[in-house]
Image (cartoon, rainbow, N blue to C red; front, side, top):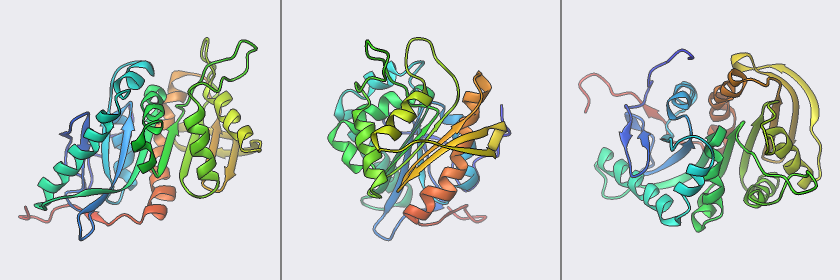
Length: 269
């Protein structure tokens, strides 16, 4: 229910093999037609509102597959599905630009809420090696062991990626609310589990952030960043989508230096 800023320098959504994409009206590519891509799972329209505020030329693909992490995990269980998605975006960019071939240069996976199921699958597949950045907006949950500890099951790919980010080989941003879901590990518990795997602890922090979010904890090691927020209701959970604009402006753009996109000039095709 936030204000809609429109599409800015971007064209409207167009279909790709799975989900939809928006690309800059002009530019956003290198001379050899390589481009930077963010694939976001769960909430493609809300994240678009935030993405276009600060994105400078990156292509966005938004994918919605239903409620719960299961449809996302099942939807990308076949490794060829994500490979087909990348190929379809490359073909769409080639058609838009009139080039013979375009290719993904830098790749990020992003999710809100249940969308992490797809990221788990992709990071476990050969295509996961292409991923440079992972953005988890109050999104990473886990299971429990019989003794009530956060279970390693399903989290191993995220632990490996967090370690690579801490070593500055990759980039990872993770936010968590104070919501305690029934029967499975909260985003807070999983965030602290990852931090513990890196040999650290969250530090107290205090800052008022976007859409009423109130930060109370943070952790930084290399390119691995965790931000903890109060709030235990649905609006608090939804507000984490508002972090996307700053993540793109403050983290992704300085890392990628994406070729600038722009709006079409009057009369320009």
